[in-house]
Length: 351
Image (cartoon, rainbow, N blue to C red; front, side, top):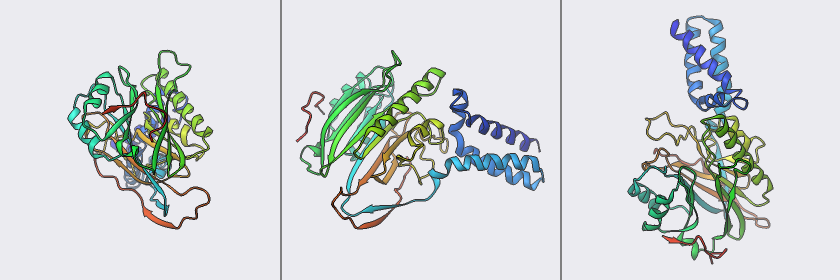
């Protein structure tokens, strides 16, 4: 009985706190464990019913229903409809951890992931130089190294140079921390033509919510990313280490109106951090969200690279543009296994 009472009180209180996360940064931290609250609520509900403790049953049911509703989009099975003739784009999100020095593991992953574009986050000066010296099938399309956790590099596969299907047209650096002096957070915007269809990708890295100031800054960066999305008329993608889970109100800043869709939907927890803990304690804080034109056909967590994050690899399909009549085929939900040359000053177009 004591176990039941203590367990229900803990998860009930944590659930209530998670619902007011937008008003108090400490309460926001409670929202990231919705999957575990759901499992605990289900177990405690069964125990309370067996013991005929109706008040505790009601509280456990509350925990189960509230958290179950939050995690449902992540676990609801989905069938992806991919029109024939769709163009494919594979993008990797790789947080290397600026203190990590396992360059062999990072080099191995970058060589093997076979992405069209790779965004490397927490790239300090050491990682910037180290990646330049690696024998990779990538060119550095944009370089914004920073000491600490918020440098970022963009790598483009060398095949894009001669590929008519995917053409990298331009890149821009955007500071999404405008208004927070001394907290610059460079984001990279990439403009591509995918079989002649213009598309845009924004890579962001807001800070972790470890204080009231950092939480406000994280939310501000996410809000500016949503404003960027709302301004786009072309198919677009936002990817990065967002430092929030899908069950936090902060993530809903991006997805609340349904204009951006998470590639994690239908695939479960898909945790990417902290990699040093055993399963199932990973939290999904590395994300890819996309506009409605795209169809996600693969979303997978990569291998250990010495960082506290697992890499994220996503393949998206873009149906043919207006005027083309596609035939629709069905593709099952993406699988999720367990875990150069510098052209920063290049011309705007890679031919």
